[in-house]
Length: 295
Image (cartoon, rainbow, N blue to C red; front, side, top):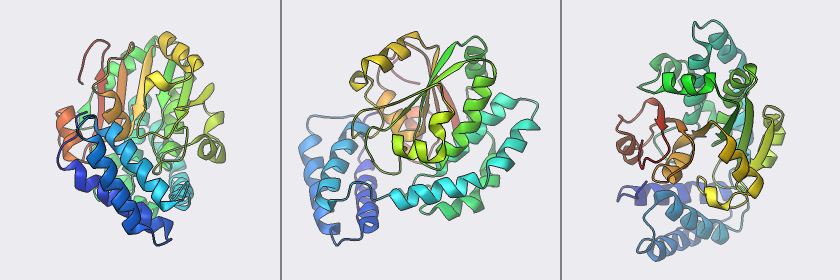
């Protein structure tokens, strides 16, 4: 997805948020480093996720903190765990278990801290969960996803945020109920509140999939070309890629991928909503097929 002017204040807002989490007096240093990186990258790079990666790389170096979100990530996982039973009962009582599980997975994407259009504290999820579920899926390619899954032998599942990943477990269980293999991919290094291998192990997420791999790098979203040869082989033989959240959408939406991608997310900002052709503030499931440049 191409970067837009309104992405600039959003990025800086996130940098300030995480510098305040670091709580070591490096707010100005982090913002200066972020702005310098943005100025250097913008003439050469248009993809919003690629620019954001370099902006956050510079900010993290200035903060001198490896994982400023760690406490928020742990609390997000704990809060989301409180709703596992409710979410499981919702899926179990539904006439369409798979669609219900996909809805729950999209609702979890609200756990995106520091952007101002989601929630800034995990505790706010308690006030939002039921109303988000009641919204249903506003942009709905679920039937396409279900059709692909009905004959799928293996699925790639690219995770996004901590907390959200607790609810992803329920969708993964539905996929695996049919005997489909699930290959999970988490971030290679701590970045924002995204799931790393360490985070996955803490909540048992690694036990929910058949294979767990990482992006092997510090990156917003995912660069498929940077994955290990093993993961590239898994993608080549998979029937579907499920990409959670806005960052994965931003990094993949303008790339050609050899298998269908199901983007499952909340549309939390106007640029992403516009790229999807959807309103802001909805649960969205959008399928992109091989050989196409956009959803």
